[in-house]
Each structure stands twice: as structure tokens, then as C-alpha cells.
Image 1 (tube, rainbow, N blue to C red):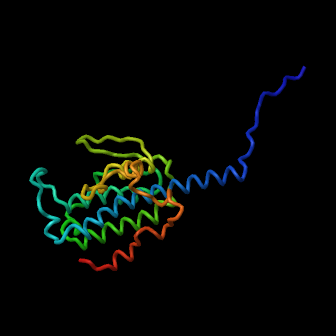
Image 2 (cartoon, rainbow, N blue to C red):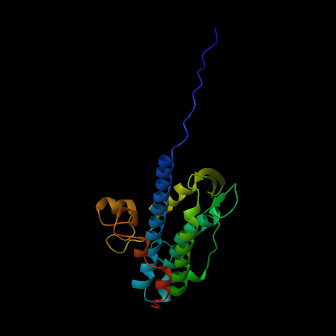
Image 3 (tube, helix red, strand yellow):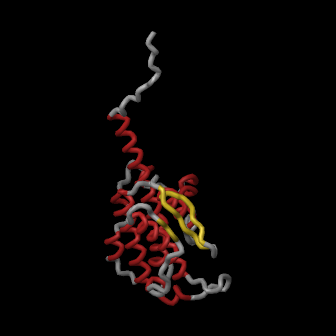
Length: 211
């Protein structure tokens, strides 16, 4: 008697299912970009509407010796830029947040800070849409001993966006997820009446010449 076959075949993914998956990925990318821009544009708002002189960027904190607003702005921007640059390198990708260039113009100049942050926003818009958020990368950290961890681009974007921010206004510096929960922030992907055009345009911001 011939043995009956127990093998099963997997039905090919239908076009509708494939489209749903593609749409879901597109939504995630839009969400990641929106969250990143929210954080970075908070820094632009700080420079445009709260700081009035270059000197304020270099005043040393009484509570955190050696810390200045300029250094914190550079440090916050670095996290995004280092991740974006990692995304542009060929596999296997290695990310280290300890690889930073200090004493940059953005630490001492409002105009320099503004330009550097808006450049980071532009990089975010150009690089993230084509990124594979699930692709594994190696995260290196010096503590002072070298350690290596496995992570992904998507996780790093979420961690950066969740941890960075400067508390000024009532909603300034809060994690976007918290603001969404409180109903105080309507991100593009949750508002059918908004499009990408509703976000501040980099060229428009650069042309304001406030400084």
C-alpha cells in the first residue's frame, strides 16, 4: 500500500494580503519619521523662540558641571545622525553612539544649531523611507569596556525618540506616545485631514532668518 503524503503546501500570498502588508510597513515608516521630526523640531523651536543669543548655548550648568545647552543639542542630534549614517553603510552594520564629533559650530552658534538640526531632519526624510527597520545591526557601547549588542534600526529610532527632549512648554520634551495618549498631539498618521505638507518645511524654516 502506498504511503499517503503528509506534506502540506503553503498558498501563495494573495495580492490583497501583500498590499495590506506593504501598507502596514508604509504606515510604520511614516510614524517613525513623524516621531523623529517631532523631537528634532522641538530643538528648532528652542533655538527660534526661546534662546536669544549665542552666549546662552555655552553657559555652564550649575547642577551638571561641564554641561551646556549647545552640547545637549549636539548630543541629541548626534543620536539621529549616527543612526542614519549607519543605515547608509553596507552590511554588516555597526552602530556606536560614542563616535561623536565634539566642539562643533552648533554648540556655540544659534544659526549653526538651527542649520545642523534641520539638516538632520532632511536626512531623516530622505533615508528612513527606504530603510529595513527589522534588519539586525550591532550596537557597540563603551562603559568603559567595549560591549556589543544586537539591535535593529526600528528599535533604535524608537529609543532615541522616547528618550530625547527638553522640557519647556507643558508638552515640550514628552515622549510622543505620552502626548498621543493624553490627546495633546495629533501626528500625521492619526489625522486624516493632515498630509506631509502640514509639517514644517525645512526650506521655509531656513528662510525665516530669525537669527
